[in-house]
Amino acid sequence: MTDTDNQSSSEENTVCVARFEIHYRQILDHNAVLTSALPTFAQDAGSLITLYRMMVKTRIFDSKAIALQRTGKMGTYASSLGQEAVAVGIGQAMSAEDVLVPTYREYGAQLQRGVSMTDLLLYWGGDERGMSYAQQPQDLPISVPIATHLPHAAGVATAFKLRNEPRVAVAVLGDGGSSKGDFYEALNLAGVWQLPMVIVINNNQWAISVPRKNQSLAQTLAQKAIAGGVQGEQVDGNDVIAMRHCMSEAIERARNGGGPSVIEALTYRMSDHTTADDASRYRATEEVQQQQKYDPIKRLHDYLMQTGNWNEKKDQALHAECAVDVEKAVQAYFDTPPAPPESMFDYLYETLPDAYQAQRAELIQQGVSNKGASNQGTGNKGVSNDG
Ligand SMILES: Cc1ncc(C[n+]2csc(CCOP(=O)(O)OP(=O)(O)O)c2C)c(N)n1
Ligand SMILES: [Mg+2]
Image (cartoon, rainbow, N blue to C red; front, side, top):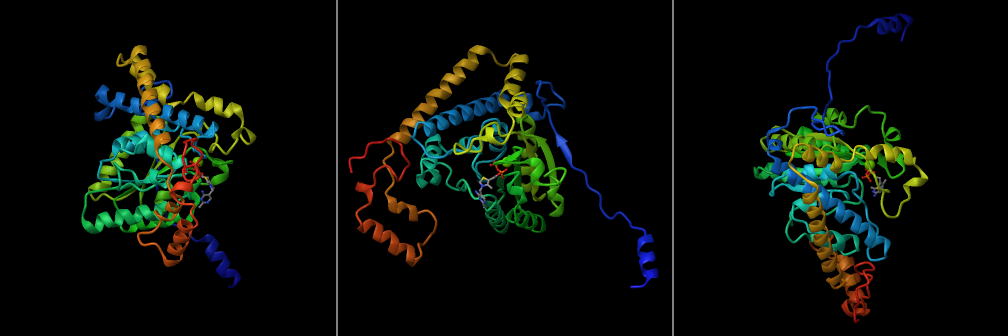
């Protein structure tokens, strides 16, 4: 290359070939003031009350699950405290025939879809039967491996497309998960094959101890959609009305052949990462206290009160009703006999490979099956087992 070449390239004019914008949506701000017009569904107070009820139920379930873990009656648990609006908005926007491909904080969506609280407790108690969802068998199990479920969701959406079924796969992952290759691979496929798929990035600002600012230099996580030729938008994930609204739009667009979307839901992980974590070691209490002002449940509560659609008596009754439901679920969890140890082989493969068949048989032969199982098969529930 000569000096002249260098000069000509530095003087070269460039032409803008593409320009993109990412929009942020909010309908109800943290002071419970409307910042946009209410979407049609939200003009019916009954729909708002349903959203509120689901968020309260999810939170009461969540605090009970933590108590079970703390008292040695359940294994490690990932809390959804403060993030209820994300999951509840997703759950309300989905149709029964759609498929949820969740990570481990979407209880609010799972409960609305018919997954029982007992199922969830069994799962966190170490019993894989909790993920076979008697009432919602087509939804995928919780994915603890980060983002590995995104290609699965693309597979589900591909099946819908090939079969010409008007169904949508909704995959949820975290801000940390959106740094992973499997997220980008699924996104790329969703775009190029125009799959009926919605990807929700639950941006709770932390990936265990890694804060959002150290996760990605991208200004928004929603803009990652652009790389895949997919629509992307940001939403206030503590505003359940906005969450439900933009999920409905994205899901119906996907269902009607309008292609996939990425929704970045801005929320905050109010709890430790899991019960095995102590977040006070890496984040400031002041930050958590500040975030409490944006609590999604308080926001809708205040709005319903202001508009005369709710009162303290109803609120107390709702809390009492949820507490009873949760206690019943806990009792059913305690009453479920432990799974035999060999069941650990039963949920990974349609047909168990030979090597595992041999191991399974060996386990049964060693006499550590059903009767001698102790409580290990289902975590330490404290259930008595006469074996
Ligand atoms: C493939 C894989 N790598 C690493 C981990 C360990 N791990 C568990 S949670 C987590 C962080 C996830 O953060 P984020 O995606 O933001 O989800 P959040 O927990 O905040 O909901 C990591 C790295 C894992 N579970 N799976
Ligand atoms: Mg996160």
